[in-house]
Length: 411
Image (cartoon, rainbow, N blue to C red):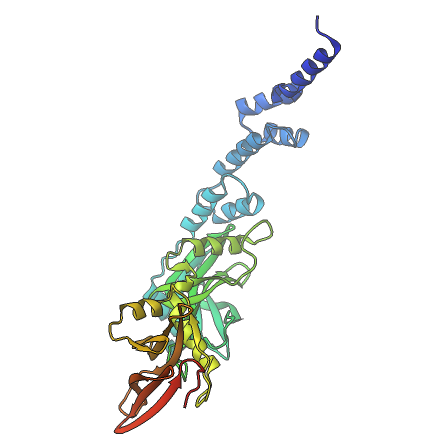
């Protein structure tokens, strides 16, 4: 016989190991088996209404969705749109979106869309991009106009009895966080996309700057990539922004939007973030790639023109400036310092290695000349007292200056 304590333990163990099916009532299990056998809406709805929290509910819901989905008219785009709207989390939502996209495939080519837009009266020189998009069995031409005063306009034309008429217009501010970036270009990506059962036009643009810094002569390579979905259903634009710096076609940065999907995000926002993650040209910011540029920019920001005392910029070990310094053969010892001068990132730089603390510093920058009349930093040599003698050339003129590497006095 079991003692009282042992009996209690055995009873508790039996509760822990009981099968989940034991918790289901006979009527619940019986109705579930009926749903499996008949696969009809009547019994599926009866089960879902009577046992909404059953462990069988997900299976019954899938059966119901299957019955509804496969009963839809293959050519009725509205029916599929309503299905997605009413069942956004259904296992068949993706298939329904696929059917919507297929039925909404436009027959209008890009040249035809451009011709339709210009014949309607939109000046060709104002068109940034144009695309034929089919929605609700009706052909549309969506035209994106070039920005004016920080806003761009979307004009949607729809065919009505063989005539093209304006169905909608929307003026939207250019999405930017850096107002120095004022050179907007539409990317080649321009296509229709079905999101949340609704038809959209996807387009993307970049914001860049065509100017270089007036002192460092370093081109402004800040860039923003903005991905957009224009909804033909509610005449609205959804967008997300990726900001960083570009090297060639690659952008090194991060998204500037705080809402990155989740339960509160719209289907459009979720779709756009997936687009960003799939874009192989968008990469996480790599500080080491831009250390040289940032160090030179720091030097100019902290050393006004004609300054008598300079601030040296500390150079991180992983910087290309350090690598170039180590590789450079024509270095010179000046007191407790080793000095090298070379061209990098649109500048002639003087890099100094302090033998005492074993640190590298950017002592001096001079933009590399574009023409013969520009000031050029040409050569240097060392004097006693940690003093560097520098020769600048401007046309036929030679300018001699000194820089004390200890006191940082420049005269």
